[in-house]
Image (cartoon, rainbow, N blue to C red):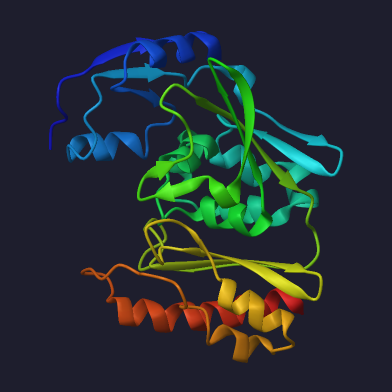
Length: 272
């Protein structure tokens, strides 16, 4: 497929990107392009202007910040996966990044682009939900923090304003009791179902991939665990409040069964 016609501009700063977003409501930011460009080829996205922010080096970093780790939005998946700060301080993020797509994708795609795209089949959003991470956005009125629990609003939609740029993702240090599992047909495919589990206060926080219009928290499982249920019993509630897709790769019934299996395994691993 061929995308609709568009203009292209490259910016040299976040402020420049904000100004161009503010002057054109149909503009889209281009980082690695692995989420946006396929949508444009299918004409699911038809921006009139692409604003290339891919060379803003000041948004590519991983650094410790007290009890949190700050990740620049333009940090490539490969750099997230191999970051010593994340591997030692929040290994679930590094682990999830290491299994995104293939090496070519990981060397070009960015964590911020993946998150801002708001795809419920993406790996990182469910991890950030389980971690209760914070997104940092900058717009004409300055900088604001958005909790991951309120960031993903609908299918391919987030809490970012049209003239805001996602600049940073802040994750808490979490080194004990975690698991990230996903089921996919091939290594490079999107997950049919994915599960991120973080042990917390005797229970766990669980994020689900591809089980609804947005990444979701498995609140039924979390409630069961806080009530003293074992992982196997709690996992039976994994599909509560979900609306998984039904497509050529798997029915909603299949995904509902699969998520219970993966949640049980993730909980057993996180709590071991």
